[in-house]
Image (tube, rainbow over all chains, first blue to last red; front, side, top):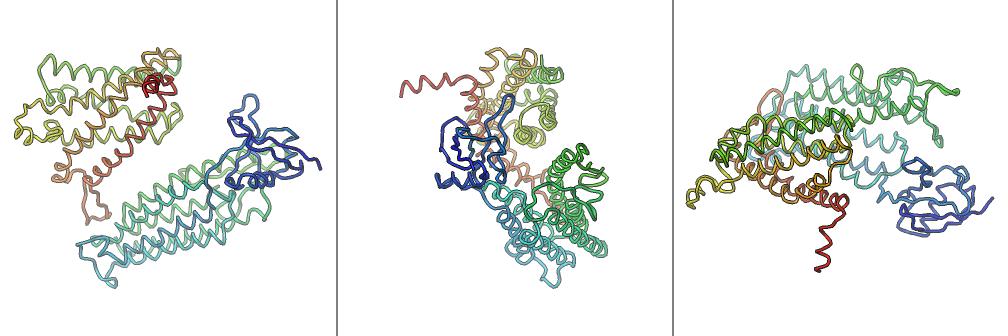
Length: 309
Length: 241
């Protein structure tokens, strides 16, 4: 129980506040104290770091759950503050990202008179079977994602900057309209029906595999645990980001089942982004689980998409 | 000295674009040619020099050069689009026409040389590239480039950017009817992979992106100029106010 007075400064060196805290308090509690002083900066928006040491570009980021004493902070210590900008909950972003496609795609299916003006569209009962399967599959996919957001996923970070919401929604809404436009077009040419049925059946297998992967990931940590764990079981025994594998294969099968290049472009764009994330995760796990000092050694696994990555 | 490959790359491109600039003005001043003759004269050096810019995206992606991949890709893409997507395929339409169509020029009784668009395009492109690649070549060779190279790099853009952008947009504007009539690079439904592509629409959208694009790029270069050159040009204005 040692009362200390911390000097909270902006990165230009100006003192923003002098905060009186206990050395056994957590960083999270320190952030609440600053929020009380300055109502604009709610805790999720605050980033606190130690000043940079010799040779460092920037100082160590203070984790919310850690105690102030763990960072060697005492009275008069300087803590640097950075405003992360308006923050939004991960789950809120996910909901809006996925709700858009859930609604946009079927609009093209049900209202061709709006989206294909002047073109004669077949009445619903005469539409090619694959168009009907595709709209059902697409809606199932995004409904599943919303379900997972609220009932399956556990998020490593609670919030993200609000500009990500606009960036992400543009991507999802844009591609939803792009793919929907071509699959539901009055001049759509359906591929062989058997091929479509097989593709979509396999795609559903991918959906369930992806769901299983997500439940495995969410069960990796018990509530309150913050340490990284090595995922295992099911496809994770062979692939670090097995959830991405199933996701990408699902979209490849959607593309082949609908014979639509626009869907192929959507698949490629998603795969490209997932590859970036997967490489980062794979590298992080290899670095953490290096087999030294009694730590496990991360097993040899594919990153995301055997045999290519 | 820095990276020898980058030195060679930047020096080669300085020479390539310098040659384009030389050929442009040789054709006009010495041979009495105009847009058509310039276009024929710069043909290969222009195509090689501009296409070589694609390597810059690779350099950025592999971390050889510090610039952000997305910005580099956007800048190179717009040049490649203008050269290979507008000027080359629609040369017969865009080389003889500028801000005015051939018909409008004739109606106004203007001489043929009133259309300067391809010449301003070559001037803007070649000057800015010689300055830019030259700056990087000198940087690789000497660590710090001589002041005049830095000054040119952070000053010439003030005239060359608007000149280049207006020339590019004029070219695209003149090409649009031709693109639509020929269905250039476009595909229509129905086809077995359900792909439709309206290149005319894409060109219009690309042209629209120039509207927010130029002020952003221009503003960025102005901020860089202030940082690098110290904003000397700004001071007299402040005194006058």
